[in-house]
Amino acid sequence: MRKRVIAMLSLCLLSGSASLYAADLENDMDTLKDGLNTVMKTGDAQEMHKALGEMRQAAQDAKKSTPEKLEGQPADSAQIKDYHAGLDSLIAQIDVVDKLAQANNLDGAKTEAKKLAEIRNANHKKFR
Image (cartoon, rainbow, N blue to C red; front, side):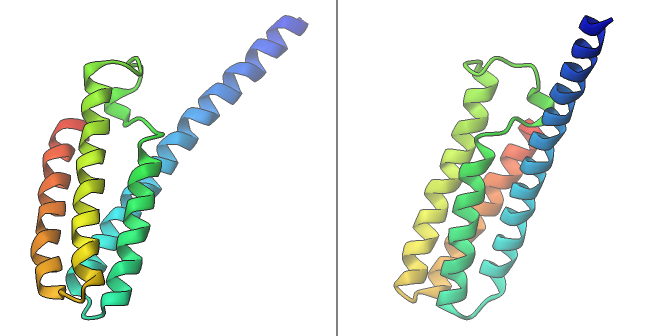
């Protein structure tokens, strides 16, 4: 009887933690979406810089999670590596946009920020 109770508790904890990862990934994606909206609409370099910093942090945090579509894949699988590469390219582009924002080149930053949406769209097709 005791083994069954322990097994049930373990199962509950494991399933609860999986949904926590999904919630974390969803929060990270919401942060990225909100940040991109701010970047595209703001006329303030400081606000843009702040939004890009939050986006960078969310993208880095998203690398710790796995999309539902890839659940069960080994960490060294081609699909997981491709997912991480997509996030790495997003982070690299965030850095490009942020440098322009820090130089107060908002028009250039917004032009480069369009590539963030392209990266998002390409990766959503693969992993969403």
